[in-house]
Length: 225
Image 1: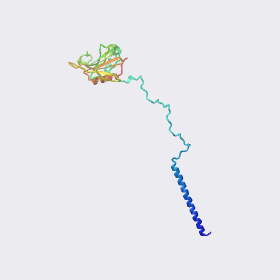
Image 2: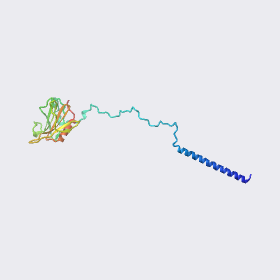
Image 3: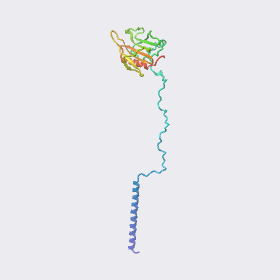
Image 4: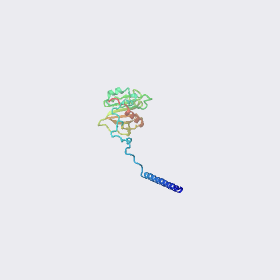
């Protein structure tokens, strides 16, 4: 075989190899393009879905919800009536059937001696307490600070009048201002609750003072029935 023939065979072989390589690259590129245009490849059917979150069960335990307070609330935590009333509680309990609603706040009582004096008018259905500056005060203007009273309501009881005031526990009070001439009368605040009418009076007292006194009486521990 001549050298010319050998060169021809080599040239043809090279051309064939080059053509085959070009065809291979073209086919590969086309397949990749088709894969890219077809979208995301679907996952196989045997995918483990056990890690998906489960919906909450229907029988949710609601036992952690706050419960309403019981009816039998311990009243021992309530504030006590003012200490000046301790000496007259036994006497009042013997004379009246009403609950004793005595205030925890009494004007001047924390720095001036105030003496509670049970009125002779106290009976089974009412009580009256005079607040005096002396132990033997008989109601005179000079020695009297004010009064505390309660009475059982009857069908003949008149409606309360005066300036309406919101007190504690949804109770409405009625304030009546003092009148002054030669002397000043008591300013009063009154309210009805559970079949009884309660009245607090302070000589020439301010509304703010009487409201504070009334709220302390409502909030304090009741004594008796």
